Length: 114
Length: 114
Figure 1 (cartoon, rainbow over the protein chains, first blue to last red):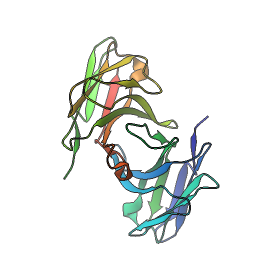
Figure 2: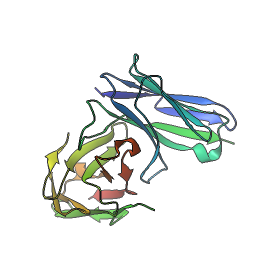
Figure 3: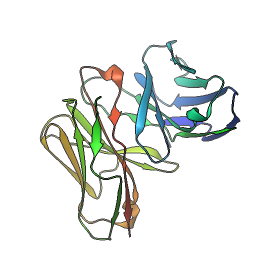
Figure 4: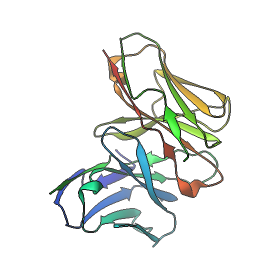
């Protein structure tokens, strides 16, 4: 089973609507990253959360970290066609030091309908 | 602008061929990673390196090897390509001094083994 579970795996929303993607870990999170991937391309770093309760925003995208629930949510307000793509969460599952792999969720494929 | 460059966007190889995937970063990062991405499975780590000539196995190293002779270059080698190695391959780099900035990914190489 996945150490990081994303939900939903696929999401279709009408342009202008709000949406939320969740990322839940089976282990303690020491750092949680959100990436966006356009189809067939590499990953673009969106933001990183490290402390429980931390919340970061960039333009219309807000990410929160719930340390107790070992969960992060990514919220998009007033979605636009440019938000379409695959969103992936990645996490450090042990204390960050030196080289350490990121574990990734399966990804959420977001489609925005005009 | 910092970059991770993967030498090929698309590759088609025959079963049994030896395949080299090249990755170069210009950020003087210590850490470099190779992931493969498959639908429904997300990103899975093949190998990573935290210094020149150093390498560590990831979660799925079987059938792969790596080489890091110079700090900026990390090569993934498929010793004898098989059809189950058809996938999207993503290279990434990071620095131990700024983990908060996450990993920088290349654009990916889509490999098809026929």
